[in-house]
Length: 243
Image 1: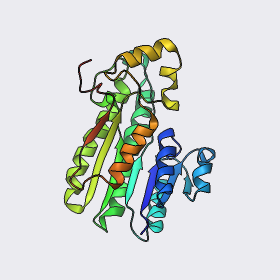
Image 2: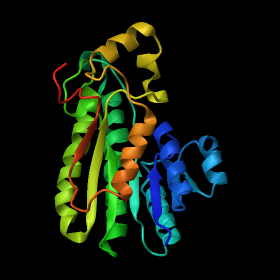
Image 3: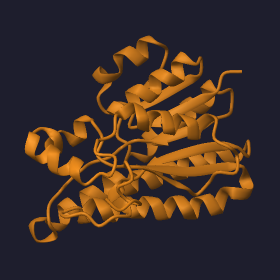
C-alpha cells in the first residue's frame, strides 16, 4: 500500500531531493511551497502541489488534509523544511528582524507540529521530522537569532516526543552543519569564507544536500520505532568532536 508524505517547505534544495526519492519509491507526496516553479519536475512525477505560506494556519491544515486524503485517511510522515539564515550580531539586528527569524523557523515548525500531530492521532501512528542547525547546540559568532530559533525547535521536538510517545507518533530532528544549498551561498560563494567555514569542520568538508535528504527519508520510513525525541547532528563532527 502506498504511503503518504507531506513536505512543508517543499521547494528547498533538500526537499527537491527528498521528494524525488519518495516518488521514485512509489509513495504519495504532497508539497506545500511558495515557489511552484521550482517543483515542476516533482509535479510531473505525480506530487500534489499546494501553494501558500507555511505560517498560514488554513494553508497548513489544507496541506495536511490533502496528504491524509491521498493516504486514504492516514498520513505517514511530515517533514518541515522551512528555514532562513540571518547572520548579524545582536547590536546590528532589530527586534523586527529577530522576530522574523523566530517566526520563519520556530513558529512555522510549531504550526506544522500542531496540524500534523492532530491528523496522526486518529491512526495512532506517524512520523514528523524537523530541521535544526549546528547553531542550535554550538555557540557560533553572529548566530544569535538562528540559534534561538533552532534551539527552540530542538526543545520543542523533545517535548512533543514525550507528549505523543504513547500515541504512536515519533518526532525527531536533523541538525545539519554548513550544507551546499542556496541558503548557504552567502557563506560559501567566496574561496576565503568557504575555507574558513570548512576549517571549523572536523571532517574538513561541507555537507551535500543528498546526505541530509537521505537521513530525513530514513527517519520517515526505515528508522526503528524506538527512535523519538532525537536530534541527529549532521555536521561533520562540528558540534561533538574537538577539531
